Image (cartoon, rainbow, N blue to C red; front, side, top):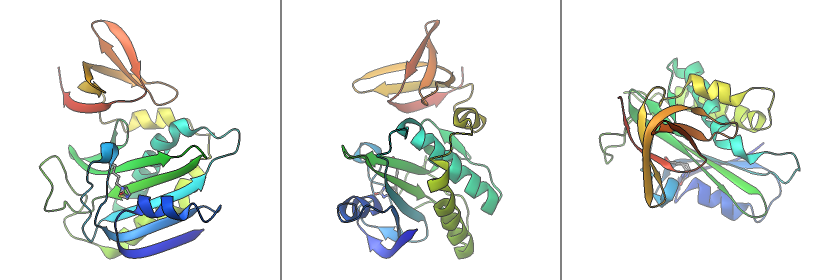
Length: 229
Ligand code: BTN
């Protein structure tokens, strides 16, 4: 597998998208820091030295590839890697925020074009960047370079395999690590908002809510608030 390593880049996702025009092979881009890292809705992803920034690029033109669960599978793969290497269990907040001790410690950004070129961007805070606010956290207090490299290697080995592995019931697995279990949430859907109790996830990873005694299912949107009853 081709792996391109950089010291500082604007964004590993941007590099992937640029390079994908020149190659049909899949590859990884990894950087020590990013100057313009971004997340969902184009929000900045603060990316100083020490944390993990990596993007995987591949083409999923084959007929039977199902892109729906990509985000969930990537989240679970990261969770397994962190558990194996650091011995701690993170949770997944729908759809792909990495949570530890009620703080966001990373995220996944998937971008795809009409040619089915897919870039999976992964950002993991080993430590909390100074410039971030109180809902952001980190996994360790002390930077351990060996652990960082082991997590990266583990993710590189497993993401490309797992995204094609449909033997595992990924939704069942996702539910085990669901940060929103038994929580009430407020979900933003474009300009609208809806609140309700999270009761499960559909076969494509859709979030299922009970609102006014009725069950609703959403395949996109953003959880903007979580609270107990
Ligand atoms: C999110 O939380 O909204 C997703 C954050 C994704 C950040 C990663 S870091 C590596 C890759 N490069 C980027 O610019 N973004 C992703």
